[in-house]
Length: 277
Image (cartoon, rainbow, N blue to C red; front, side):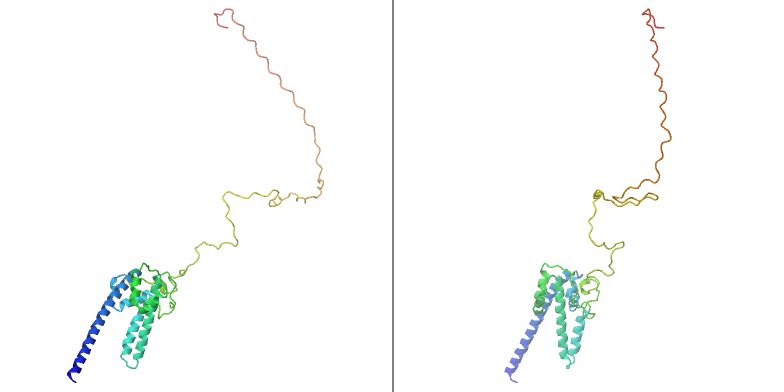
């Protein structure tokens, strides 16, 4: 190998080293920016502790949890790729596991976008430029909302989130049972009865409709009283004629005597100076 070949090989090594350093710097900068954007999204979701967004792998697990995906899928995927990559024959399956992990991440991003009032089409931006997707959701005016329909995989024990971590809010939309729809054990309150059929307007207080003339509910006859006659029927004669009067009324008594005449007034005195006797 002559000097020219050595110089070319050295230049190739130098270029590869430069590109390696450049890729490393770009990866570090991308990780810092992505973690910062993810920290802002975690704040919207109510995650306690900003440090969670800066821990590698752990921040992706929290992102899965917020997206109603099981966070253990991240560890399953990374562990499967590492193990299968050591086996030359099974290296192809390591790539399939990585592809499946990317699909799961897109599913989690779709759910996170829904909770931030984003349409399903925003998942395309996450697949193509995830850093841009994170930046938009981190700094827009959207607010975290878990009052959405349960995830389609909510009944799947492998995909759905069933974990409870301190400092990370449990997502009520992760499962279709508790937290969504009517609460379990809900029933009508005690003493409640179903309303009767038909509508009846409420009666106004102190008001009663006037009775129609000549109309009223029939009153049953008293015991021993004769039954009422039908209209237009002849009146039968009384069974016993009335008894004649026994004696004429007595004449009025002697009228009282008139009152007595008033007495004679006293005679005037002969001497005006003298008092009367």
